[in-house]
Amino acid sequence: MNDEVVMRLRLQSVAAYRELCRSVQRSGRENIVFALLMLGLAFFFFQPRAGGIATIVFYLYVGLALGEFAVGLFKSLYPTAEGILLDSFVLLVFAGWNIGWQGLWLARGLPPNILILLLGVWMLFGSISRFRSYLVLRKLFAERPSAEHMAWFDDLVYEIKTADPQTDELVLDLPTNPHWKAKLLGSTAFFVAVNGNSVWVTGPEDFALRREKTERGTGWRKAMLSIHGERYPEFDLSDVSWSNYTKWAAGQRPTAPAGTT
Image (cartoon, rainbow, N blue to C red; front, top):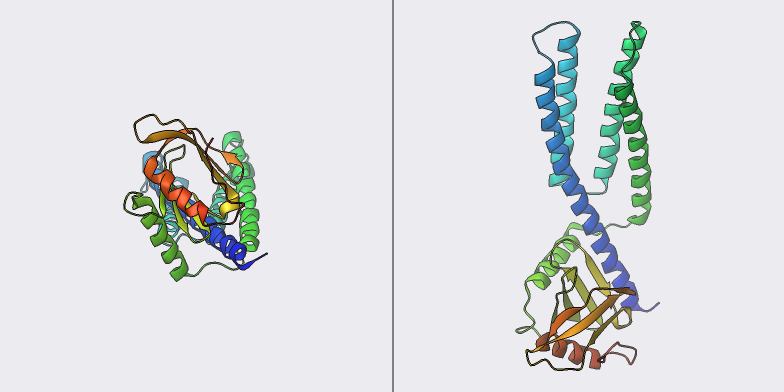
């Protein structure tokens, strides 16, 4: 495995960790919404001044909701793989609350609420599943990118998304589904989804771009793109992007996928 391949693998690992952090950040916003919903339900179903068990249940709900809100805020501001671990703890607390509550009812000789009991069991299994996912992520990202490396990668992704192939000969605009922008740097091609967080870091042998020979008189021709063997829907490719690609491909090894169909 040569140095270029090793570099691409490391960059792809950065891209994967970046996408993981974005998903943790999105789930953090979901935690916040759920916490606000819990607070609303607590005030709706339980009166804090009613006294007795109702007051205890109310303050327990408020405490859980505030904990959920804090977790969501942390995940939104500092998205890391540990956000998955926090989710595991939150679900474990909710599972303990739901199952424990029904246990108290049972101890008092009252029939438990089967729906709440099943919900508690479901949350318990969800907590275990997230904990296992976190253990896998720890192994996959044993060497995590530094904050500086992540910031550099974010800047590169933004640069590619906003680049114009007419003013930058290293850029391709590939309006397939999803819509990709590509930056051709040396023997490495960075594919960035215009909408979303997907990023592919490839070499000349990892993707293929083909365009039909027939000129339609519009400056565009139908093209096909495949990345790591995955083919994307046919799209219209401009003369400018095709010219940028063929110039780059001509300077690569003979295995580079240049040519028309």
